[in-house]
Length: 269
Ligand SMILES: [Zn+2]
Image (cartoon, rainbow, N blue to C red; front, side, top):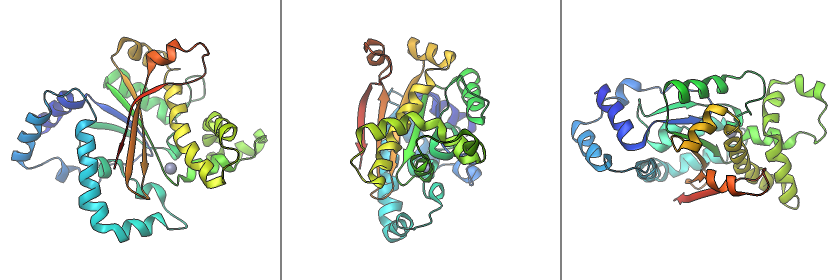
């Protein structure tokens, strides 16, 4: 069964590294033993497909129908919780129906990827391992609504005293997303703080996608077409999932170097 899962993963979607706060699936043994018939059917359905997201979309829609809408009061109460344990409400394996062997997952505060030229982080080690050793073919960075990490970033004074930042692990980490904050302030200054946070939750995903290209071994694989970089955004207040892909060729053709370009945007709802 293990071998089947690995094969299925390679056939249907390549392997996917997902960047979110770290966790270990709690029911690995149970989830690793799907019904034989289902296993075989899904093999047949997906072995010819090259889109890594076609199954993921169906699995998300199943989650929405069978879990979210079936327990709408529970999920709505979580969404309205004033002191939410946010990431406990946003479990990637749960919402996207991922099985053991399908995705190497990293979860961190505000789902940020630091640029190559910065200090050590666990996320960097995970990138090196998954890209160079596991040779994943897709990286998907997932942001989410009501992210307390992004809220912390957006709440920091613009001219933050570096000594003050160093006094807090959270501030020291979320400052990684400062350019997403600056660009949010530039285009959404007239919006409310909450609306700015919603904007920055997606903007930070795009900044992290750009940061991925600062890793020479990632950029090389992307340029060769061996690795694709994707963004995702889960809005758990209405249970929608938005996904998009970084357009590397589009970025290269830009005259000015700082912008990003995306393609293949979809909203699953
Ligand atoms: Zn978050």
